[in-house]
Image (cartoon, rainbow, N blue to C red; front, top):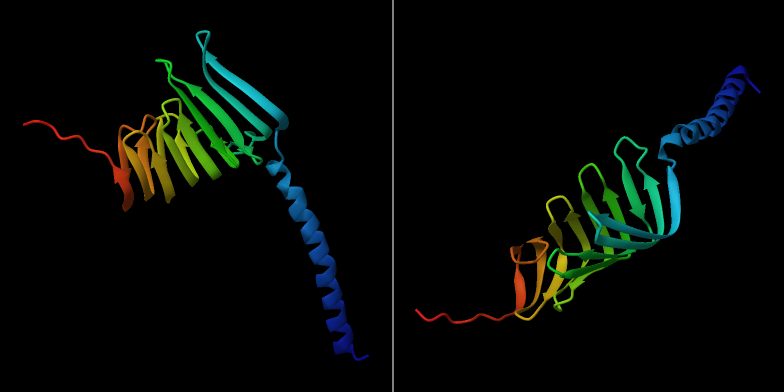
Length: 181
């Protein structure tokens, strides 16, 4: 083998050896992506002044609140029940969820269903919930039904009670009442 051939062979071997070490170094640097905790069969009750305000059930909760941008993940979905001050109850279900405590944003994905005790129901594939502002929004297709509405649309921007509701293109039925002038 010529000197040039030997040199090329050594360079190739060096790169092969370095790539294995580089992969190991990358894994070492992932220490900050390790969760601070994992909870199975989570049942969390949130109360304020001895009044239950919310209840959360999840098969698994992975807590990454130790990161620079902390979050808490629900990789196998969640079920939540929210109790209003006037006796109203809202149910939330999704196949996957992430909660970002600094922004109070909850990202719900996969078969997202929000319903309440009056029969109001919202279905979509992804929904963001701003818990601090009690505001919902999505850019995905959704259906919304209650006593007065049966509609399908893309894009939703609404308050928790659905009294303030803005959408994109709508199809469906809306019941309106005539007012005497």
